[in-house]
Length: 622
Image (cartoon, rainbow, N blue to C red; front, side, top):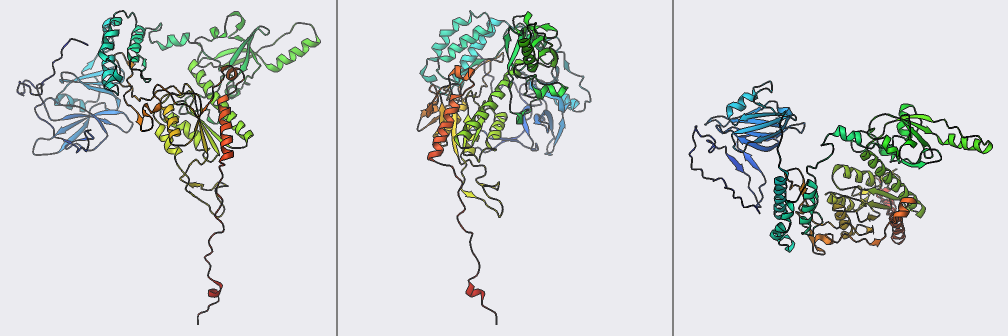
């Protein structure tokens, strides 16, 4: 779209290399051996003379010497700059030195002129060096980082928003054009799309306006994995976390109901997560409610329970404000004092009121607690929902006469979700059924790992003298092969790789799908086409297909259709705490087990008798 022309640097400079002009070309080249490649993709390179190691990048070759700067990943997974000095011919030796300070490197870049190297240490420490062997040799011998330092204390960037919006619009359009999996852009005239929305960019008054335009432009592709998010937005606190925390409404980790009778807030629910996993995946704090017995007993206090009433916060009556949240603003992580009417006390006072018409006299009890952030409260409620759903599945399966394991995956992003699958699967793989719940799943890319585990089959069994498959023996091979029936719960919020694993389970005949039609994103992406301010208009980059479904695997713009269609009634789900989809899954499994029971195979009969024939036993040696 831009009319600006860019001159590409020539590969054959007219200026001959000389000591007076070291930046024209490097005076000496290091021999680089490119590995033999069977395909058109480069697999590896080897710099002759440099020992093997976990190198991540070639930073530069010194402008006046064959020596090279390489980035190496250390044992602590932090990068360091290594200087490799090549000894003059005929020697083939190479010396290796750390560029000081090796352990504190954050980033390293080569200037566009190739005459300087910038090394970043910590957050604000920048060292700018000439790209010469003398400068780097000096730094390898330094003991203090006090030379060639750039003063970044007063750095600022002047940005003309309208020009930046123009640039980001152009970049987003261009990267969608270059990254999208279909070079024909789904048949859309992409140049016409550019000109259709470009006039609107001049009207953008804020970053959010640009997001709207990028969303409309990208939506012309009719692809579900196009997202517009991130970037630099104007906020009241301009990124100051302390100011934001002061205005953030903290949570007591409970559901409260305003009561005119007691002029306070009655506790109607305290979310309870799985007590076996109170700290998950490296979390620094427990997932319990600040009002729970598990938390308050640590300070010698008694936990609160459903029916208790909160009447004051930090000495102020909660009845004086429209909502208790106003008194909890900015209190996350800080100790607050609650005045609480305990349920037994309320019952006692009510009984006394029945016998005597005098006014009720309540005596609140002080309770010290530490409210949590809204994000932690959301995590608490989600974890409690998982635990409650698991308990319901186990209870309903027991009532139906079979055993079940329940696994919920919030997403498919990596180690945390792999841990969640492992926690739910491996303790339960011997049960008759498993429910894999991928409702609300945000996607990721671990479907192949999960499908690999679910496809294991038992083909032989083990039995010792005192142990067997019934009493905790080795079981069977393949190890951890699930022999039962599998049901996958899906809904309209099951997206991306949550849909992928559901489609895989269905196509491979591993289980049945119960719920509602899913989101419908079947083109994969890496989300690396970032804009200048850190925002992005994602480009679906990797198409999926099969001979059965064709492009999109029957997912793109369609979603995965369940084998058994059932939707959760929102009112019943919220008010009665019921889960109709889970109930149907239990019913499907019960019918399935009745038609195809999952039983352990009995031993094949008596063990082999290898004793000698009686007539042979009577033979004697003469």
